[in-house]
Image (spheres, rainbow, N blue to C red):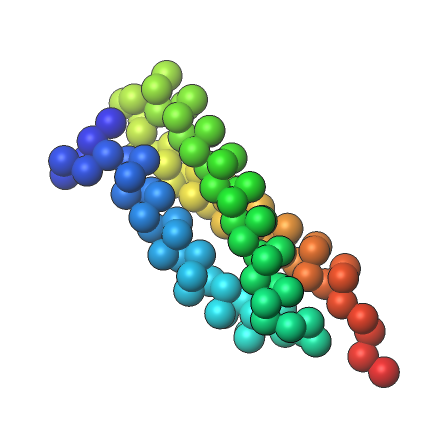
Length: 102
């Protein structure tokens, strides 16, 4: 499906990866500060982002193909679900692997 002559998959992918870059610095410095090195955290962050992105593409492809009249609504719902999934996974992996501060 195209909106303004740009496919939903392309625009969603560009927005996702732009948010990934900005999100890493915000998550690393503000949301989940910790003692692990930047490089170590970026590796786990990138893996989480790619897994969630694959989920995002799969869900959007399946549902938008079957319910094209609701494409924009489905896209918005998928973005919200993926944002929550990202937050949960980053919180789980980053905080469970941190050593307690003594």
